[in-house]
Every structure is written in structure tokens, then in C-alpha cells.
Image (cartoon, rainbow, N blue to C red; front, top):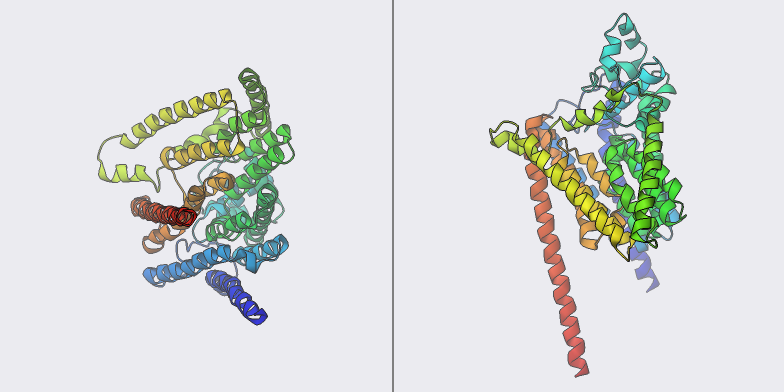
Length: 494
């Protein structure tokens, strides 16, 4: 019997090895590229899994195959977690090993990291305000082009698609970019490595905070080895992982330390990277003062809302000259990509149809959002789970209905409060995140372009619809099984 148990455990460990091997395979094209070229300077092999000019369909097939192995291994590990990991320390070690492998993946699905580093270098080395001066503005003025020869961080930022755009993020992110770019000596390879290692560290910290909030290995693994998080957070080095970190820290101080001021501080820092995080603010304040009367809750919302705004304003002090500093919000919303707005533009030849629908949806969203918070103010019993679910519904609506420039890595926003959702919604969030990575196959085959956003969106809608159907079928089977068991128990009693 003991031997059978040991053999079973040994077989289960194959899952861990399989996930590691698939991760290494995912990194192989990047390692080969670095061996051949020795640098990521002038890297432009975006949406090519093998990072070369070989057959795009063949590359897409390899990408899908590796992603399928990662996905199946991921779900298998989640199911067998109790046998695979004796304690949370082993979970952290495994997450660290997997994360380190993805550090070596060149960001072939996004060029944002080189824009981050470019504006950071512009700020730290050349004392330019990136909210008012673009990388191209600086390089193309006077004799500044001479810096491109030695400063490869600036050079890669200059050639980036966003090189002619001022900063579109909040000042906390710009300051982080300033620090990282400032310590990299203008070397793009060192800069990329530093940023990747930093994102890896943030990823592990997030895993730690999730455990501190929930005390469950399931949620840590659900986040920590999710192929989506590894690809978008570490391989593609997106800044959304920092927003996740600040929101998790905010929740930790709210729920575990009962310290609202520190909680609001972290939430403000998250908002000063990407502005959507402000949606969580009233839920946090109302929940903290859930034992107070509605009138008292309202006063507290006003007081702590002002504190929140003061922190936001303080973060802008370094960069603000005038209101032009807020142009980044409009820059993002003026772009259309990878959502149903693209379908409207593609198939309905009606001037400004997309912008009109977006405006209508925004008005509806604002009305429902404020109405919900007013109702919450007046409720007698308030649970955090209820607040978290309300916030997540609004975030889903904001993500898929209001943002015109949708990107797959925005799905990361749903993860900090995922643990308090209903089981089927939690499953759906994970499924949507993975579907987005399979949907990237559209760009691997055709290259990036706004028109390719239409098949990407159809892929996403189809995948989500299938998942909803499968989840519903599974729920029905569970209910039927539970009902049969109840009948059997009743029959035995009779």
C-alpha cells in the first residue's frame, strides 16, 4: 500500500516537471535569438513565436501546442496541489522557478517594455519631462541624435511605436521607470533584465499577499503559475502587475491590519499607475465603516475620498506643469483595438458610431455605479465578499464595454479580488485570461494591425461562449448529482 501511494505521488510530480519543461520550450526561441544576435537592440520580431522569418502558421502551431501543454499542466497541478506541495514554502519555490524561466522570454507579444524604458531614460538621464516631451521630440531636436549611439535604451525607445507619444500612465509608473532606467547605464539588455527580474519579484510578492489574504494554496497557484500571468506579467513585462500588487497590499491592510489610511495609500498608488483602480475606493471605505450609520459612512467617504485625491495630486507634483499632464487618459481612449468597437467600425459604415455607443455606455455605467454605491451606503449588513463581487462586475463592464483600446493584459485587473467571487465566476476569469493568450494566434499568423482586432474579438467571444456553456453544463450535472444523492438519502430514511 505504501509503495502504491509513493508511485502515485511520483506520477503526480511528473506534472510539475512537465510544466517546467513546457516553460523552458517557451523560452527556447528567445534564448536562441540572444545566442545568435547577442542583444535585443533593434529587436522587431513581434508576434513571431520562433523570433525569425520562418512560416508564420508553423510558428503559430508551435505556440498553440506549447500553450496547450502549459494550460493542461496548470489545471492538473491545481487539482493535485495537496499531493504535490506539502506546504506553502514549496509553492513559493515552484512559482519562483517557473517565473525565472519566463524572465528569459523576450517580449515578442508587446513592445511596451521598450517604451517604458525609453521614457524612464528620457526622464532620469536627460532631465526631460516625459508628460510634455516625447522620445522622438527629444532625439530629433538639436544634436541629441548623437546619444543614440551609446544609449541603447534611448535608441530602442526611439524606434518604438509609442516613441512619438507622451506618457499615458500615472506618475507612479513614470517614477518607477525613471529609477529602473536610471540604474541601467543606457544598456538595453541590462535594462530589460533588471525590469524582468523586478516583475518576477513583484509576481512572487503578489503570490505571498494572496496567501496572506486567503490562507489557501489554491489561490496562490491559481495566480502564481497561471500561463497568462507568466506571459503577460513577466515575459511581456507589463506594468499591470504593479497595479495588482498595490491593490493586493491595499486589501491586506484593509482586511488583515484594519488600517484604512495605509489601505487608501496603496490604492492611490495603484490609481497613479492606471486610473481604473479608483473604482474600488468607495467599496473600501464603506466596508471599513460598515458598523456606522449611513450618514456617518457618507461623511467618512468624503473625508477619506479627499485624502485619496490629495495623495494622487501629490504623486503628480514631480511632473505637473499644467493640465496637459492628463492627456494620457485621452490618448488611450482615442484608440480602438481588440473589442466589439472594432467590429462596429469594420462592418457598420456609420460615422462616429463607436464613439457614440461608448458615450452612451459610459453614462449608463456612471449612473449604475453611483446608484449601487448609494444603495451600499444605506445597507445594514455589509460583507467584503459582497463588495468585492459588486466591484468585479463593474470592472468587467469597464473592461469589456467602456475601454475602446482593449488589450489582453488588462484582464490582469480582475485577479486581485478574484478570490471572493463565486466559484463559476472565478473559473470564468481564469478561462478568459487563458483564452486571450490563445487568441493571440490571430496576430502570430497575420501580424499586428487594427483590422486583426476583429478576428481576435471573435476568437475571444467564441472562447468565452464555449466556456460559459461548459460551465453551465458542469453546474447542471453537479446539481443533478446532488439531487440524486438527496433522493437516495431520503429513500433510505423511508
